[in-house]
Length: 382
Image (cartoon, rainbow, N blue to C red; front, side, top):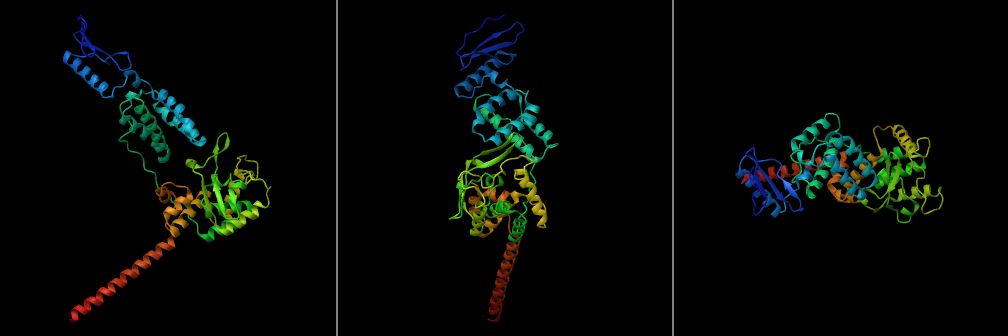
C-alpha cells in the first residue's frame, strides 16, 4: 500500500488494487473523497486540478448536496417561499407538488435528474392531463430546480431543452351590447348590477363579489378594486387582487345609477358588502356564490345565449375597449401590467369592425387603381 503523498491541493494514494484514491479539503472545511477511484495517477491528479479550479472560481458544489432528493429539497423550498404567496397560489402549488411532481420524481436525487428524465416525465403527464396542467407542473419543477442551482445544490438545472405540449387557444365568448342587455334584463337587481359591472367595468367575478360600500363612489362613478375572493376547499378567502394590484376605474353613468338603486336597498354601512352572501360558497343558501352561479346560468338560457360564463363578460369588456380606445387602455382597465396578456387571453377583434376595415382597404385600393389608370391614359396620349 502506497503512503499518502503531500500535495499543494488534495491528497492521493495508491491502493493495493493499483487504483488511486483521492481526498481534498473543501471550502466548507470538510474532508471530501472523490466519488470513485482512478485507474492512473494522471487521472487522479486531473480530477484534483478540476476540483481546485472549481473552488477558486466559485463553481464547487459539495458532493453531498446533489444526493439530497427532490422531495427533500422541494419541502425546504416550499417552506421558505410560501409566505409570499396568496392563499390560492399556496393551495394550488401544494396540490401540484404532491400529485404531479413528488409522486413521480420525489425519490430522485437532485444530481441524478437529467433533462431526458424531465422529458419522459412531461410525456407521462401529457398522456393523462391537459396541456395547461402539464405546463403548470413543469413550471413548478423548474422553480424548484432553479432554487437548487441558486443555493449551490447542483451546477445547472435539468429543466432545459424540454418540449412542452402546446395549449390550444380557446376564444372567449364576446357578447354584443344587445346580448349583454338581454342577459342583464333576465337577472334580479343585484345580479343585474353584477353583470353590468363585469361587462362595463371589466372586473373579475372574484373582484366584484367582495366590493364594499366604501369601494364605490356613486358621485363620480368610480369603483375601487381593493379585494378579491378565492374559492378554496376550506371555504372562500378574501385577499388582495391578483398580483396585489389595487386599481380604480370609472364605470358608465347608467351603471353607476343602477348601482345606486341597488345600494339603496342595503344597510348604510361603509364596510358592508355590496353583494351580501355571494362571497360564501354554502350550497343551500340562495344568496350564496353557488346561488349566483345557478341564477347566472338560468339568465344566460333565458336570454337565448349559450356557453357564456362571468369571465366572458370581462373578455367582452376588453374587446369593446380595445376596439374603441386601444389595447393599452383595455389593459389598464383590466389591471394587466403587460398588454400582451390582454390581447392573448381577452381582447378579440369585433367582427363588424373587421368588415369595416376590409371595405376601407377595398376603397383605398380602388381609388389608387383608378388614379393609376388615369395617369397611364394621360401618359399614353402624349
